[in-house]
Image (cartoon, rainbow, N blue to C red; front, top):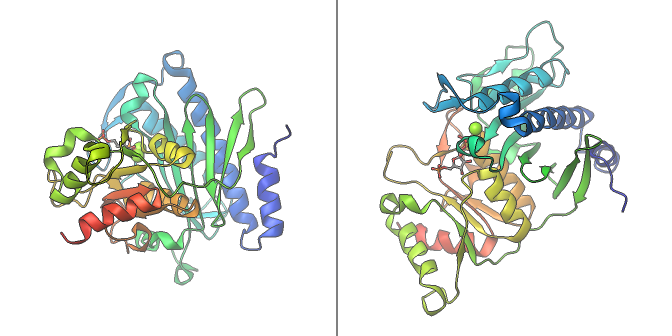
Length: 336
Ligand SMILES: O=P(O)(O)OC[C@H]1O[C@](O)(COP(=O)(O)O)[C@@H](O)[C@@H]1O
Ligand SMILES: [Mg+2]
Ligand SMILES: [Mg+2]
């Protein structure tokens, strides 16, 4: 079977779909190249000295793993000089990274979670990189880009994607006209189009949630999971299966592959935070991909991509995946 390369796919998209600008195509190619480098580093493990933690904490107060920092640097360096970007923002950096004056500047903004699933790095379980591309607002032209320029709802994303470093290294992207997946041919170092028109089944019998947080959940979330656990003779009338990889990338990838619902809802451990996951680096790009694959993504009630961000590192509750199941959770939560 003959597969298209990522470059062939993107050039074709640029020709067929006038919405894909040459700059965005180049940007995605550079991000994909950086993900390949991160994938190589991940694959070396102890041999490359990349496992383990650093002394430092990131802006979220989380201990940084060596690979969190390395992946962040790989993405910054790869994307700094190409001329497509005005600035970047990352889960691992306190504030935005403006393109230095020595390089040409473009009109796009790149946001990323350089290494998702940090707790899985040292145990050889799938981890990933998540990215989102926005356009700098028109009013920013001719002046320095600032943090507020990034505070755009997810509906404004031009493209989004993730790489998963698992048994296969894969790249899944949306340009706003469906979702496609590429598998890295590790012998030639080429991303090959292996998954066209990815669709999430509307119904599912599989949920993903960290059950150890049950006592902290809001009552409607607890009720929904209780009803799932009740199985065929319970109110939902079906037996459910459960999965929790604890790498959002891997959990979402499974949902894109065979359906399911992923939940990281608000809980009472930190009641003033709307959730654990980050709106700009995790929830928005994944919501764009999930919606483009026919699924649905909410904060349990409201559409995530409609949320107007007020802070770069804003958190959000996340319920996404198979449409009918996400709707079901919304019905449980809407009254509370
Ligand atoms: O360990 P928990 O609380 O189950 O959280 C798991 C979640 O945290 C995350 O690992 C957060 O991402 P980072 O590793 O990028 O901080 C998600 O990928 C995952 O869904
Ligand atoms: Mg993450
Ligand atoms: Mg991360």
